[in-house]
Length: 216
Image 1 (tube, rainbow, N blue to C red):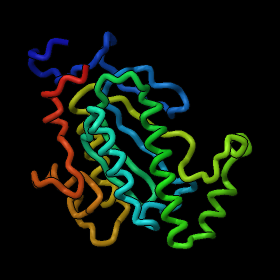
Image 2 (tube, helix red, strand yellow; image 1 turned 135 degrees about the vertical axis):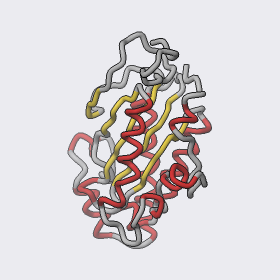
Image 3 (spheres, helix red, strand yellow; image 1 turned 90 degrees about the vertical axis):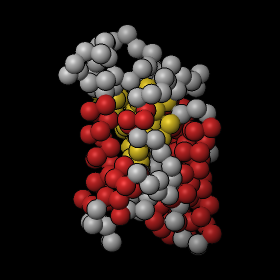
């Protein structure tokens, strides 16, 4: 697509031959792309507030650090008490995007379980253990911390990314989180940078800054 044409949205540079489109799927199916921008959601099992219960928000930030070290970009995020939304720009990688996210969930889950043990939440740990299905139990899985799949929307244009970023940042307001009147009031979100140009708890790049980055 010619990026100089007037009134056409700028398209991010990725390894793609298809025309512009948006799609959604629950990622039990493999993401075949080797790079791209994705709106990602994963949820604590049965919507338990495991992040707030363990104060485990930093476990997500540690995963973000890992992604950055591998050349990927965090464009926006919110960590709610029981789920995570993020827009992540994946650079060309030999590892599948499914594997990257699955490994991230596994790392975060391990850390949350460790903290549940530290604060003696035996009742929660027993629930998480009971919810492991038979197949996973045979694979030696001990706790079901997250819902098995994660959701994604693949983003090709700046307007679509903006829509997802706005949705992310408004999550705490819609949930009527205590002390949150405006999106930038919520601590564990990239809203502060977008609204005030001051980085919040975790530094990100904006979707406008992303336009200058070649993901190929």
